[in-house]
Image (cartoon, rainbow, N blue to C red; front, side, top):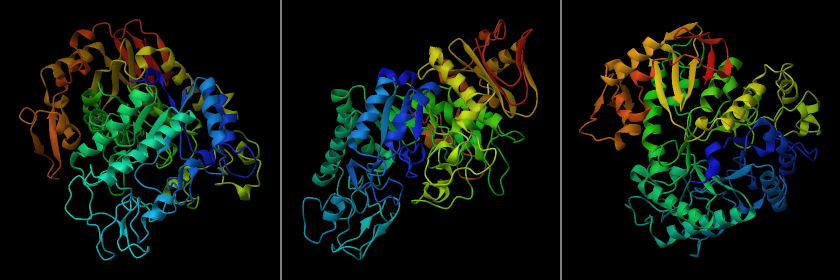
Length: 580
C-alpha cells in the first residue's frame, strides 16, 4: 500500500470546466497548472483528473479515440507531463481516469475490428457471428459495419465494448476470459497504464471497473484481472495506486486488489441514506436533511459491514459528488453540506472532493445537455473563481463557454468566500488541515462506534482518542455518559434495537451462513442478514469507555453549538464536533 494514500485528500477536476488559460471558453491543462497553488492552499494533496484523451466527445471524453494522445482542446502531451511535474513539486499526486471497458467507435482498434476481413483486431471487441444474432441481456448494434455481426455496447451507441471474455461461455462467438483475444485486450490495457505512468501520473481511477468480463458471477474473474494489474504496479511502479468505481469493497479491494473503492450514491445504500433518500411517493429518510425522518442505522447497516470486513485490504472512498451525480447543493443547505463534509472527511478511508463543492456550487437544473451529459450536465458547469467576467473561469465571450456559469446574483465564488471566516470554503479548509494534522483522522485510523440510536441523535463515534459527534436534526439534543454506557451494554448483550439488518449482497458473502442466515423481511423479498453490532469486534462500543467520555474535551473543529459539561454532551441543531 503506497504510504501517501494514508493522508490523501483528492480533488476531482473536470478539465473542460475548471479554468480556461487561453480565452477560448474551454478549460485546459495549462489552466489546471495555473491553479495548482489553489488546490494546495485548500489542503488537498492529490488530484483525480477526468479524461483529457483524444475523443469525439460524444460522452465528454469517456469515449476514447486514442488513449495515448491528449485532446487538442486541452493541450498536448507535454502539457500533461508538465502538470504531473508541477503538481509533484507542490507535494500533489495526480491520478487520471482509466476507461478500460470500451472505446469510441472512432478508435483505430474498432475501425479494424469492424472490417469484414479477419485481422489481428477482429477479436478486440465483442461481436456475434451473424448480423442477425443479438446478444441476450446486453445492448448491441447491428447493421452498421461491413462485418457480419453485431457488437456489444457498454453505454452509448458510440461506445463498443472491449473483449475481455465471458465468465460463462454459452455461444460459439463468445470468448473465454483466458482466450487469446481476451488476453490480448488485457495486455493492451496494461500497456496503456505503463505509458501514462511513464509520463508521470501516480495511478488511475478506473471507470466501470466491475464491468470488464461479461456475465462474471460474483466478479471473480474480473477481480483476478485487476489483481494482475496490481501485481504489475507493485513490481514496476510501487507508488502507483488503483482506485475503483465499483462500490463493493469485498469484490474490489479483497478480491480485486484495488487500493481504494468509491462509495457510490446507489439508491438505498448507506451514502444515499445520508444525503438523498427520498423520491416521488416516498417519505424523506435522508439523514443529513433537516426535518426528515432519517435513521442513522440506515447508514450503519450498510457501511459498517463494508468497512469492517474490507479494512485490512484497502480503503473506502467517500465522495462529495462527481461529474455523474447531482451536486450536494441540490439536496442540502450550506449548513447541511458542512455536516456531510465533516463526516466524509473524518470517517476512515481516502476521500474525494468534487471541484466547486468547497464553495457550495449549485446543480444547474436548466442547463441543456452537452456532450452526452443529459441530467449530469448540471454538475459540470464552470468553476466559480471570482465575481469578474464569467465568474473568473474564462476571458472568452460568454457565448463561447463550454457551459454557462451560474447567473444568480448570489453565485458563490472562491474570492468572496476566501475572505469570509465563516464561509463553507474556510470550513472545508479547516477540516482538511485538521485531517492532515491528526493522524487518527486519516485513512487507516481506528473507528469505534460510541452511540447510535434509531431515529435519535446525536451519532457519536471515535477515531483513536478523538471523539466525533453529529446532530443533523433540527432539534437541540443531549446525551449523558450514562446513556453511552447503557448503549454499550445493549450492544454487548445483543439487544434487538442495536442489531444491523444488512442487505445480503453486501454482507452475506463474507459471513458464515450458519451463524448469520439470510432472511426475507418486510414482505418485499429483500434478503437481509442480522448482524449483531458486538460481532464487529474493535468497532463496537465498550461500557467502560463511557466513564469520563465527555470530561475535559478540547474542541478541534465545531460547526453549530456544542458543549461538554457535567458528564453531558449538548448539541444544537445541525451541529458537528471533533473533540480531543
